[in-house]
Structures are given as structure tokens and as C-alpha cells.
Amino acid sequence: MTDRIAERYVRLAHAIDAHSDGFIDGYGGPREWAVREKRDPAALQQDAQALLADVAGVAEPERRAWLEVQVRAMHTMARLLAGEALPYEAEVRGLYDIEPRRADLAQLDGALAELERVLPGSGTLAEREEALRGRLAVPRGDILRVAQPILTELRARVAGVFGLPDGEDFRIGLVNDKPWSGYNWPLGNLKSRIDINTDLPVVLPALPDLMAHEGYPGHHTEHATKEARLVRERGWAEHSVQLINAPECVVSEGIAVNALRAVMPRGEVEAWLTGELSAVAGVNPEDVQVFLAAGEAKKALTSVSGEAAMRLHADGAPESEVLEFLRTYALASEARAAQSLRFLQNPNFRAYIFTYAVGGDLVRAALERGGTAAYARLLREPVTPGQLRA
Image (cartoon, rainbow, N blue to C red; front, side, top):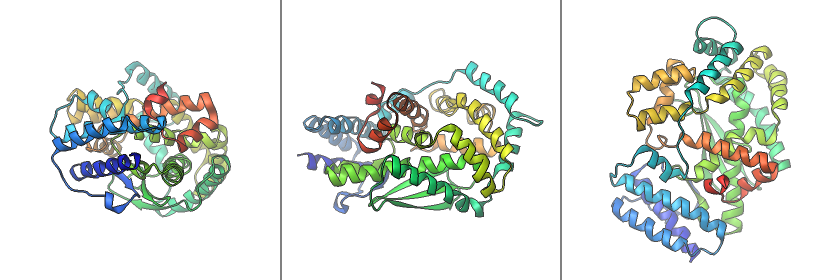
């Protein structure tokens, strides 16, 4: 019965992906299940409802709970594909099992005041940060060279603390013209591809977090570990497919947002960046220290992207107003503000933006409660946003 449920789940995901290209982020299961043919969205809704009813009979509680929220999200996708006009907040809720957040403007203004103190130089805050980023930018031809010792260290730590399945691996490439800064593509068979977008400068202090987020112990580690433990060992083939518009992304992004913290204390990261890695990249360690101090102040700005999305999609604000908001509170240059807006307007990511802040907070709280063991559970077991909230 449950094997049949996994097959129906995978087939429904491919049927939705036929309408919404990119709904499936990665797939490594049986080829015969990957039938990507468009069907009437009303029929997809019926399939999701029938599947949800049958999921209630799954014996394993953790498997059942995860499938329930995932299939509900697929039903929401089918409603959207049928042309149903859901309020933006309901769209976020239906797809991700979380509440969208508005920003506290007083908190944002307080963060800007702290940045005024931290960032040296003359000009606007955005101009000063752009100048700092320019001094810390890694030339495109050096990015993979500088990333290599970071990956080597992170992989060793992850293998020692959490373990890695035999045969896991990924390759890294540099790309352009994307709405994101980095992306992990699950390829199946314990493999991934990581793309780093070089439309905007890649700065040294962001590289350890980027490599942890996309690689060790972030997305790649999670996907490979769950493929090994859930698909191969337990036979839960629904985990052979990764979906973009579903609650699993909240947990996955929460894992990735907290990935570097899970294997390396903040003080050690700072020492690494201002020591060995500054020498490898050929940048001034004092600039790195300023960037890190600014990063601490900017933690209070994590709600900026979600607020921009709410203004754009819930309030109907014009693009020019949203761009100005991003330039002001994200300290974004015109180019970076435009890239952020492009991400928010992408059909697959317009509601996705909340997975970072909400998922990050949920996983951070789990880490504070349970430490390494809590993070290990998230890498290995199916957990829902609701379970993390509880």
C-alpha cells in the first residue's frame, strides 16, 4: 500500500511539474514514474485529495505526518494551476505550512542606525557597503580555488560529526543570469550539482556560509543523507523527489541557513576568515572584520525580503516602490535590488522567500534546544514545519 502511495506521490509531482516547470527540484527515482504530461488541474486536485485520504492509512507516524503536509501543498498547487485566485498569505500558508511575516520598520531602522556606526567611509550606507564588498570580491577565476579549502574543512567536520553516506559527491560550476546567488541541484544517486551565480561579486566572507548552505552540511548533505537512509534503507521512495513549493523546503532552508553554525562556532569562523582564508584570497583581514560586524547588525534585517514580497504580492505596491524599499533596507545597489525583485517575481520563488527566515528561526530554535543531535535528526528524518514549531 505504502509503496503505491510513494508512486502516486511521485507521479502527481511530475504532473504538476508539467504545468509549473521547476516544481520538481530534483528526482532520482524510477524513470517509469516520471511521467511529465499535462492533465486538467481539476483532475490533479482530485488526485491530491484521494492521495491525502489514503496517506491517513500509512502506518509509520513520521512518514504519515510528512506526506500529509506535502500532499496538501500539492493540492494548493493544483488549485493555483486551475486559476483559483488565492490571497498571497493563503498561498504561502498552503504551500509551506507557515505564516508569512511582516517586518517591524522600527527594528529595521534600528539596524540601519547600527550599520551607520559599523560601516566606515563616506557616502550612503549602500555606497559604503558596496565599496566594502568591492574590496572583498573574489575574482571569478579564483572562486573555485578559494572555495576548495573551505569545502575540504567543512566536509571533514561533517563526516566526523554527522557522518556522510558512501559515494556522496557534488560538482561546482559558475553560472550567470540567475535570480539566486547559489543553488544546489539534487541529481539522485547521492550526487548534487552546485551552481554559484557570478552576476554580482562573490565576496570572501560569504563563501564559507555559501559552501555550508549548498554543500556541507546543508542541502547536499541533507539530500544525500535522506536518500541513503529513507529511500535506500527504509524504502520511502517519496523522498527520491524534491519539490520547490512544499513544506519540506522550510526545513531544508532552515538546515542550510544554520549549516555553518552547526559545525563551526562563530569565533572560529571569524579566525578562519581573517587568517588562512584572507591569505588564500589576498584580501585585507581588517575589511573582513568590518564585513562580519556589519553582518551581525544586518541580522535584524532578515525580514526585509519577506516584507518586500508582501508589499509586491499582497499590497500590490508598484515595482519602483519595492525596489526603493530594497535599496533602503537591504542596502542593495540597483543591480542587487533588481536581482532580489527578479527572485520575488519568479513563479516558483514568489512565496518561497519566507522559507529562509521562518525555516532559519525554527531550525535555530531546535539547535538551541537539542544541539548537534537535533540537527542530525533534521538531516536524517522527515520533519515538518509544524513539528518544529511544536
